[in-house]
Image (tube, rainbow, N blue to C red; front, side, top):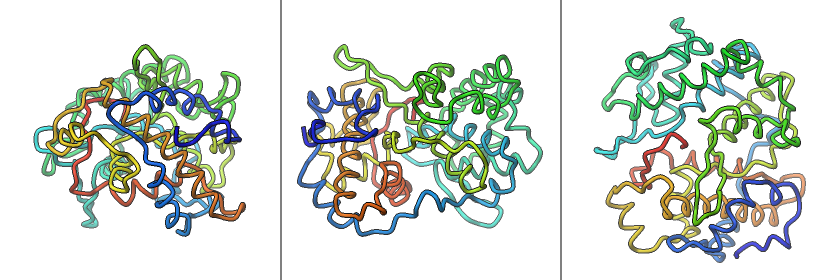
Length: 342
C-alpha cells in the first residue's frame, strides 16, 4: 500500500469511504497507484495557489437566489450530474449560452438549468421533479450538436428524488437539508449519511469480490457545492467536517491521474479506454479505477500538505477541482461507463 494508514491521522483517513476502497487498492489487478509519481506531482502542485474555502465565491445566478433556492439548485444539478459523453460518438454534450460562450459537460448542464429557471420553469420544486419527462428535459437541454445522453435515466432520477421530497419534505431540498445535522457524519444524522440512505439515487456502492465498496461521488459533490454556496452567500448551515470528504470518483480525475503517471493501467485496460470501449458498471476494472482514484487523491493531498505551511493545507476536494477544471474538456478519451452514479 502506497500510504500506510497506520501513519495517517485525522478525519479523512478514518471516514467510511476511504476505509471502503482500501481492499480494492490492495487487491487490484487492472490498476495500480505509483508512489513515485505522487511525490513528483506533489513537488510542483504544492506550490500552486488554492483559494481558501473561507473565501469561496459563487456565480451571480446562485448569489441572487434565496438560501432555500440555492440549496435546491445545488442538489438539483448534482442529482443529474452524470454521463455527458455520447457513447457512439465519444463526444461531450455542449451548450452555447446567449453570451456566446460554449460550455461542456456539467458546466453546460448547469447553464441550461439556469436558463430554464430564468424562463420560469419551476425546476427547483419537488413537484416539477416528480413529474418531469425525458421530452421535457430535451427542451431544457437542447441537442446542440449532440443530444444529452441518458435522458430517460435523468427523468427517472428526478422523478424518484422529487417524489421523496414531496412525500416527506414538502417538496423542498432545503427542508430536508435543515432536518439533518450540518455535518457529513454525525452518528447517522449527518447529511451524507442521510442522503445516501434516504435517496437511492445517491447510494453509489459496488460489490467487488464480495466486498461492499461505497464511493458516494455525487452525494459528496452535491453537499460540497451547497457548502460553498452557503459560505459565499453568508448563509447559515455550512458543513462542519468537509475535510472528511474524499475526492469525487468520476471520469475526468482518473484521466488526469493517468496522464500524471499516478494511476497506471494494464495495457489491456488502457487500450480499451483509448478505443472508446465501454467499461461496464461494477466490473472489476471500473471499481478499481474509481477506488484507486479516491485513494491516490488522498495520498496526493497528504503529499501536497507535507510541502505547504499548516495554514495553507488543502483538502482532497480542492485538489480534485484543480485537476477536473484543467482536463474536463480535453479531447483525450476517458473511460466510459453507462451509469447514473457519475
